[in-house]
Length: 163
Image 1: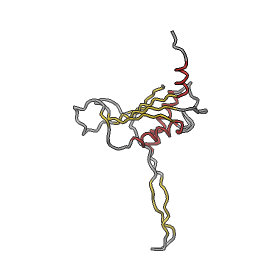
Image 2: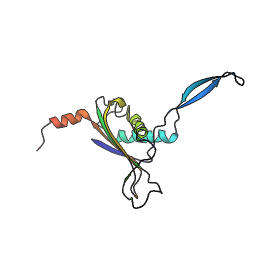
Image 3: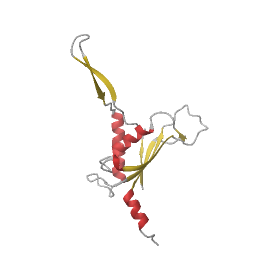
Image 4: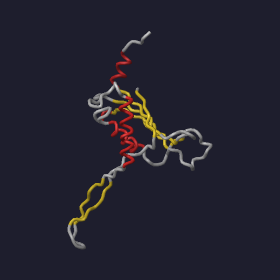
């Protein structure tokens, strides 16, 4: 398994929002037309770039970004979120985070950031483990990502031990 970490504030993938546009002119003569707004922020785009750059550095010589991996992938992610001031000091170790952002929204941004960089499509991820915790006292916020190519795992189990 190749493990790498990205320092910084873990951000979720912005979700599309429904909105209504009124077509036509004049009061009461318009027709409501629903559509989706895809919000995106500079912060989430920067976080996505940071993840992709860290992945390219970690997988240098293993995966060519011009020709991403095509087989099954196992993924482990831990989000270490900045510790709020309201968290008691007696909870000095990492503490499970039960607040927003939702874990699936955090995962989606990571998966999208690694798509076409490490693997061709995030459908290749067949096994995933994720957790989000508040940082311990003095610990920096970061995202720790572990990627295992399943084909390599099978080859490692099939080869005889060295020694």
